Image (cartoon, rainbow, N blue to C red):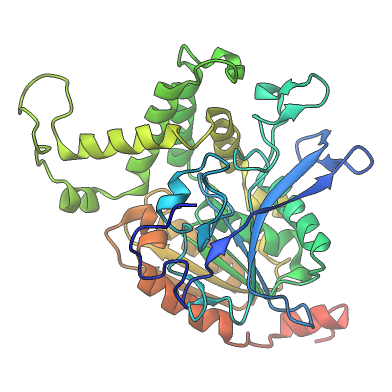
Length: 412
């Protein structure tokens, strides 16, 4: 194990969860396969997850964190087994939300038991397209079944059952993780006390669908894609890199890109030299694309973006009516949007908050002014920390809706 570089919250810091060790559980087998929303079922299913802190005697201090598209279960601390599993990028940096999760931080692991798992279809230890199909003895590839956000949440519920957790103190997620948090509050209203939705809404816009379609096109038309059966060959690196470059543009904002890059020429580049990388923004996107192919599977990208496309809370739970769907929710909800986010714009996040208000569900909504675009939920850590700390530790209001739910029906 190599020591990490200098970091304020390195593994020996009292503010860090320290060295972490992922765990794996088999949550579906031939006797108990996982039924899928679109149809059919899958087995076996192994889930990789990490936990931090301790579950209290009452088992009521658990917080589930749901990761975004390219995230994973490694939320905080330093992965002790990164090198042995070929995940060398984890050796160089802590978990993706290390500024928020840890002793004394907003999600305080001295007080809460934190759980995060890799989603179904992942390439990070949970069963996915790169896993072995028991019927063929070879990687699934595109034979892997289509999965949805609902399937992910159902699998997370099985994980919590295995850990002996009946009810969550809170479920927290940003971006695609935020949609998982919404689905948790809808699918398991009796199991969720608080629901935090950051930079996410009840469905992806047509523009978001379009960006995902172009990304998948780039992957599937790479000559090395081989209809998804590339695991014994060179993977579709160029297509995946292009998909990631496109995605990064959607994660930023126009103003933020102007501030960060402008039209500046990359150091050492020859201006107006043709089609080589010249501008700093080109260099940044090229780096992001090349780095991504070293750690992510192209087939997983296809499946996860499609699940992102399919999620529509109103269609699933309210016959197309978001207000009707939100009537199921019993949690106290925090919805946070970011002013320059054009993947999940503030108006769409506010629409979800308004649907909750019309049901008299306790909801706090805030639009944060930021130039960081969609990535603001990861970058604006001071603001996010302050909001989470207050919301997670404050007792939710005892509304008439919640009283009626406890009493088994409305007696108002």
